[in-house]
Length: 153
Image (tube, rainbow, N blue to C red; front, side, top):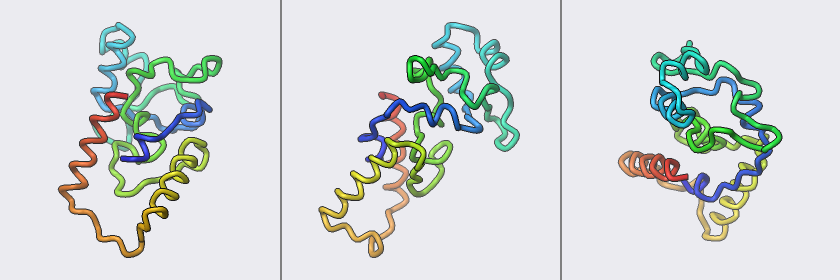
């Protein structure tokens, strides 16, 4: 959770130009349709295809780079309505299903954030090898807090 809260995007476009697939939940498609002020069925037809690996999920049609990446502006044209998989990048797997943080070496903000967190943990004497596993209820509560925090970003 701390990774996302202190992460500073460098606007390099790596995530927008290398993400494959860029997955969407149905509510992501609805948010994009509202943002673009078009009907949901038109947004789904124009921008998505069914995800072959995840029933009920969608993928963006146009990737590498993402259709909504604007190189000149250095960012996402639908940033306020970007999909969940984009909101949790660069640290967690699609939909936050992984139990650990994954650092994307291609993302300078990710590397910088992990360096800051590692230094902070070392400063307080955190011993990762002897750490007690988290209580599953605490993990679920932390994930829900992160979801809410990311909606506000």
